[in-house]
Structures are given as structure tokens and as C-alpha cells.
Length: 319
Image (tube, rainbow, N blue to C red; front, side, top):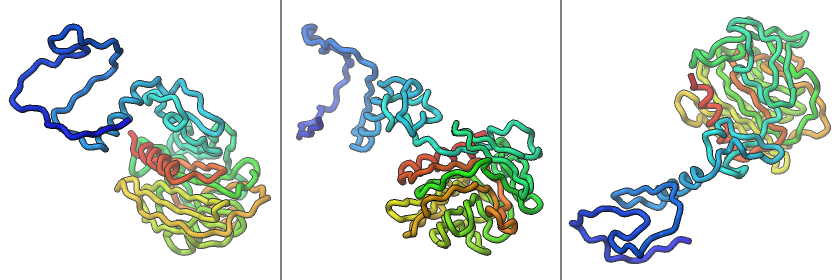
């Protein structure tokens, strides 16, 4: 409950001892209780500050999230050991269908990246195909402690999923990338087929990243070379909307957010996913560094996407 009433106020001028769990002098006025936290401010806090502290203390009063069992389709937050709670909303996040993290690659900087193993637990691994140049492992230009897969060093390079996967009609893609230069035409981050299913790529001869569904050139948001970004591209097959959000990691601001109507991803496909190049057109390639690429075979709402964008931005800056 919440109640508020008029008061005459606390008289001024006093100087007193504070007593816990009993009246100051009347020994028969006492409490039988357990106390985990007691805090005091010598000023009035507004509703938002009080709500913040109440929620914070409630979380502290619960067990660590690391002992919580998430529901199917969810996984514990990366820092679950330091968060207290006992429910999915507090302790869990949507589990990705694919999670590629350059920090998982154990070879040294400058080495060829012939395979990139999926860290989602689903074994959706990627490898160099016969028509792909081989990318290399490097360190991010904005953070010398962060490994990246370096695509397009001297022409087209790519990695492809080792098997073909069913193409979802709704999907979410989030990743950390930085473009070192202009590659070939269109410059895909990831692609499935050509103008049929989906591609996350630049619009032709621009630096505008597009959630490309079928042959739709919107939504799209502009980027600059040599800057690290978190991109979040989505397709809502039910609501028939597609989204492109881009977050500037160094500036700590949203570069842009766009949403447009879409025909949606056609159903029934089974395709190989290609990173940093078009599926078959070898002249459509990207010159970029990629630290993370993740995918969900469903549409994530704005709150979940914001959560992952901020999480990935923090990873990209961590030393």
C-alpha cells in the first residue's frame, strides 16, 4: 500500500539519539522483527528516488540470480552472480539462436580465422567456404584489449554457416562492428540469399545500413568509417514491420532508429548464412571488424533489444 497525509512536520532544533527496535525510553514499546537494511536521508526524496531505492533493496533481499533456473528460451544474465532475484524478469534474458563472439577465438592476433564457433550452445558454427577469402583475427582499433574478426583485408572474405538453416519469418540481429573502409557493392554484414529472404547490408554506394527484406531499401541508418557501433536489425513477421537501430559506442548515443512496413520474410526457406559478403555475389563484400554477431529466430521487443545493445556496448569498451 501507499498512503500520504498532511502533517504538522517535525519540530526544529532537537538533538536526539536514534533507537532501533524499541522506543527511546519506554521499554515496553519494542518490536519482534528481523532487519536486513535500515537507511536514512536527512532530506526529502521524491517518488522516483524512493521507488529506485525500494526496488534496489528488494533485489538485495533476494538470493543471487546465479541459482535461478530460467524458463525455456531464456538464459541467465552474464552477471547473474552479482544480481539478486528469483524470477525470469530479473535474472534472465532471451537466449540467442546464434552467438558469435571474437573473444572465444583462441588463436593469436594476425592469424587466419578459418572457423568461428557458435557460443550459444546450439553449434551453429561458421567456417571459410571454397568461394570465400579468409578473414583474420585482429584487435579493435577503439579498444586494444578486444578481439575482432577482420573482414575484407585485401578483397572479399567471408564465413558461412556450416549447414543450411530454416529461414525464420521473424528475426533479430545484434552485433558490434566497425567499418575500416568501403568494400564492394552493398557491403553485407550478414546475408541469406539475394533479394529473397533477408540481408543486413549497406544500401548501394552509401554508408546507410539497411534491414533488407526481399528487395526493400528501408529502414536504413547512416554510419561513418572507423567508428564502433552496435547495430540492432529486426523483422516482425506478424506485425509486418522491419527495424534498424544503431548505437554509437564511443559517443554513447543512438545514431538513429528507423522502422518501416515490410512484406516480411517469406516462409519455407532453408539457407546458408554468410557473414561479410553476399551469399553468391563475390563483389558484394564488407571491409569491417566484427566483435560480436548474434541472432534470434524471433522478434525481440524494444526493451530486450535495448538491453542487448547496452550489454554489447559495455563489452566493446571493457579492458
